[in-house]
Length: 93
Length: 452
Image (cartoon, rainbow over all chains, first blue to last red; front, side, top):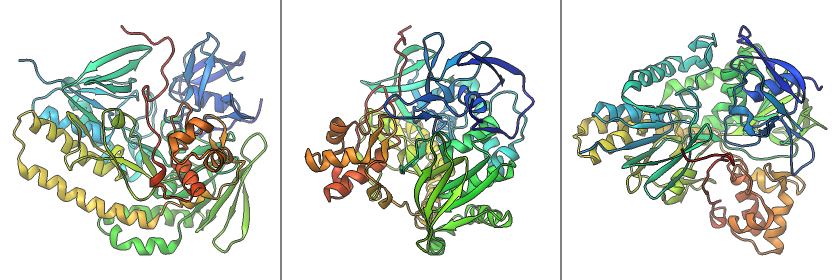
């Protein structure tokens, strides 16, 4: 997996939350959004459906709608406004 | 007789103060907010369990943030507060919301829209690469997630947020590779007459700039950004400096923006008339009290960018207007006090526009291959083609032909630049190409959303 995009610079001491990204386990912490977890795990949130290349969010405040992702259960969610929860399983491609 | 049903959309500075004014007059509004906690974007509260104190999160604005949060907590028992709730339509006297997949129609007697703003974006080659974010986005990552958006971040664009976010990231211990401002130092001097209207705020801005110098951060003014570089993700920024020399700076993230842009979609659906501001934005027309349409009011940055302090005042003013329109007695002195403070902020804001002018001309000179609409992957060239060969002279017509602005953000992100590109291609004023129409739902709804 690519080097993480985000760097955690504060608020490190939070309870671990186990999620699954593209079938691989990843340990986020309570209070992370799904977008944060994805960008601490790598550098991709999703593959752009109309253009070449990956996307990694943009506005982080629920306005640009560029971080909608598929969950393994078939639902779609906006990663920047979705808190992580134990067992959450997300697909970035 | 049942009490009037008043609905407020947004729990930022304007929404909270509107709610407070109503509660002070014995009214109990419903407050709808998309965020999980009140405060809006500027005074956004981090999730439960975060430990940084307010002075770290909000800097100079810590006391204001804490006052606003405390005011809202005190109001809570009198409010029907609905966080995590999207307001997605206004139609026939009702507001439509969605929370956790459940749709609700809320008929209202009065509606106050406090929808706030987002970054004003001008695309450039490479801006969709992973690692490119808005300035506001970089700030959200830091404040609400405790994360820097990269190891080495270049901040570019213009406006107060450019310096504030760069300062906050540096103070958090992450590397600011450079700050690149399209405005020139002499713009700031020309702006002094306006900026002194609110000297404390002007001094805070000067401090952020001084802090850059003290940290020896590379800082250029009068630049023109040329491209965000990288193959699969951000690897650098190319820009032209004030002397006309092309330069490159390596980085693994960029955060950019050119001031803010109001969120006006619900106002439009509520029947607002719009006026062109002369500088690329269409603003909903409100009277001084915030009256927007019959029984609909608006306050804060959603009506035009004046900042958080003005939003608090405008929110209170709109709340008082609703109270007065419902027959409550509002002392004229209270209104006069609000107006005095708002006019000082307007003078300051006019100064900011001079200090950090939006480089609107950047969009018109973008290369054809640049992605303009990031939702649809539609290019600047595609828009120019329909402008020149399909006679599309109006932005909605052009959208239908080339998909620019048609994606799920409804042109929030690209609309500003798209109008500039179209106007330049047609050789007409930006005002003449019109504005992208909003439609319900103003943000995507899950297909499985259901009525209760």
